[in-house]
Length: 286
Image 1 (cartoon, rainbow, N blue to C red):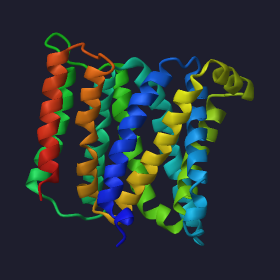
Image 2: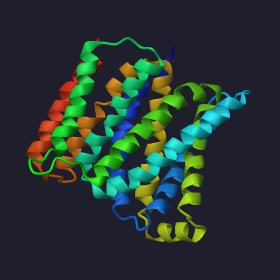
Image 3: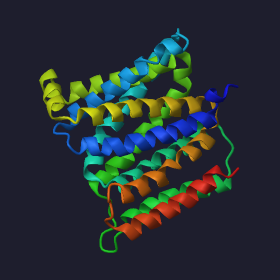
Image 4: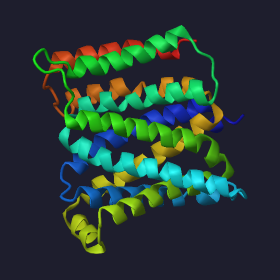
């Protein structure tokens, strides 16, 4: 197998692009005036990035209609995740958002065991438990142990994203991969546009106030991270790939502390990151 097609290369490329996406996007969305319009613009930029890659991959379409039904189902889950994510990023600190977003890997790990019948290992189960525990530490209060509404939305978004990715792993193999990813970006955009009643005028208004370079960079990194993640999941074991992908957590938390100066509840965030870090080490142990 060509190194560029290996899951190891694609995981490494995913980690680089998702870190860049989180850091750039966090700054860009803070200035968004219309959350729904901002989501659609970001989806459009990511989709265009994928369209540029279409000629470099075999042109193929499935002949069974069930594949298109699953594509639509995945798009519905992506639409829910994308819309929730924009609100969550605006109202949660970057380090908190990053930790909660790692629950995607917990859901993917569970799906890997249930859907793909991958081997169960106690070390991996303990790793998942520690990541869940890290999020508990992050939000536990003596007087009030309830989650904020944004934290709950983050958990729902993580589940929706994990479900969409699991559908993608099998279905995307029947399509030209960049085209498939572009469709799973455009269709959710149209769904959000319909249900949020986003007009062309609202999109133009958001463009006028948007930080265009930030949107372009974040959107292209988003598309690239989806591409590398899906390629890694197609050729590697789901439980192994998502375990390595989760290492992006520690880097994002560190960058949020040193670059974005996100230092509220520092001890709790450091403790949660350390617990999650141990969990991720256990996840990658065979």
